Amino acid sequence: MYQTLVIAHVVMIIATMVSTIALARIRGSVEHKYLLLTCVCVDLYTIGYYVELTAENIDVAVTSLGFQYTGLGLASLCYSMFVFNYCKVKIVPPWVWRVLAGYFMIIIALVVTCRHHTYYYSSIRWIEEGLFPHLNLGRSPMFWCFTVMQTTLLVISSVVVWFRRKRSLKKNERKQLTFLFVETLIPVLGILA
Image (cartoon, rainbow, N blue to C red; front, side, top):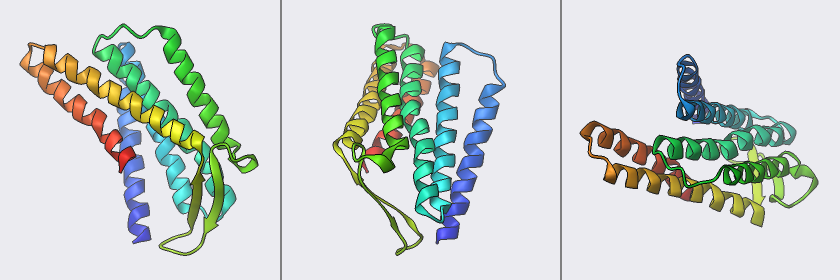
C-alpha cells in the first residue's frame, strides 16, 4: 500500500510539473502570472510532501515541512490574486495582498523553525508504527489561524467566482466560471476533510 501511495504521488508531481512547464511557455496577462505562481507553489508543496512521505528520519521530514508550507501558504494567496484579477474585482487595495503575503511569510518562518518553539506545532514526534514511518504533529493556535486564513481566502475566492458567473451573460464564460468555481472549492473540501 505504501509503494502505491508513493507511486501515485510521483505521478502527481509529474502532472503538476508538466502543467507548470506548459503554463510557463505561454506569455500572458497578470492573471496568467498569478496562475503560474500558484502552479509553482503547488509544485513546491507536492515535492515537499513527497520528501516527507519518503523520509527515513525526523530531521528530513521536518525539513520538508518548510517546502510544503512555502507552497501551501503562498498557493492560496496567489490563487486568490488570480481569481480576483480574472473576475475583474478591484476592491482589494494592494496593501491587503502585501499584508497577507507578510502573514504567510511569518507562518513559513514559524514552520521552518518549528523544532525550536511550540508556536506552530505543540509537539513533533517521529512514529515508526503504522503503514510507514511518519511525523505526528501536535497543532498550536497558529496552525489553526493559518488553516482558517487559508480557508477564508479560498471561500472568498469561490464567492467572487460565483457572483461573476451570475453576472455573466455569455454562455461560454459561464461554463468556464462554473469550472473555476468547482476548482476553487476542491481545496476547501480538502482542508475541511
